[in-house]
Image (cartoon, rainbow, N blue to C red; front, side, top):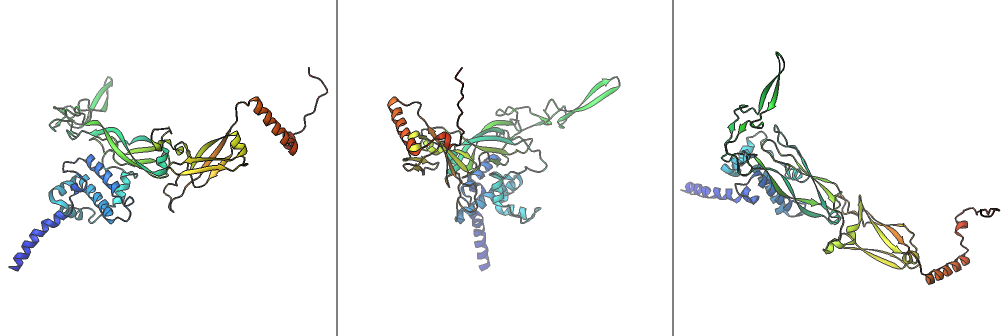
Length: 410
């Protein structure tokens, strides 16, 4: 009787233990009809959300990150997805243990790197499609502070209505001309008794080896369509301009090949005065060269000559950099000042935050003309000071005195 009771308890608990493990589809916030494209979108979003770097010292988030990678890798593979749908996690585990590499575990960080900047090669034995390159422009302040951007790319995708068959009813018939080979042999006579044979793509099925009677109403029998897809990119602090980020398998799709990679080049957006407060910062007009920033400050003649001025530059993150000269401190035209540590953050610096320099070039603006009274007063002060100090620009510069000719002017 005790044995029977134990067996009944075990029979009740086993299903509960199986249900305790979260369903792979629920982990990715998808249902069982999700396409491969839906899986990729879900993995891309959730893996970024729960990545350990974004959630330091959070064991729950780290565990979620691993589970999301595991769910994606099972469901994106057609064979293991069928096993999971039928037998659940235990069925997948048994399949993996009896496969070619029993007990093998994939690194979730390796999968993440392939999605967000790795690059990888497609499936073996299948033709790989071309890569796609796009360029997105982001403001300089995003390179300084770091930011996440959403962008859209129009690309070719496999028709989800006919699942890439091109047929309304899913049926394709073997081509009567090439008999499913996709190629035909053309014989051409070059001269009497001399023939040349050439292998050419079948002009009836277009090399596909099959034809469609009832074309799909969505793609018109083309098996693919154009669609706009949204992506997310993380611009890291100090990231170099022109850096390329690779999204594995996100280029143009086709039933005839494995999709290539989408390569995104991140460049700097041209500065412009906007309506938002963050778009009106002085720092938006800094010029960047490597880890250094450059700024041109304009001074009046009085400020350059007599000093006693202050400038407050609002940096890219809103903090203020003060430039100033005390009274009597002269700034020469085109003088350069280095403000240490106020440049760009150094990208992925191993020893904590480190910054380049802010290079300030001073431009002195002279008045176009002087009115009579000012000119006389200025000349009087200058002559008085020169007589007192004995300044002679020609002599002090070491120039030879001009020799006077004995001849008069012609």
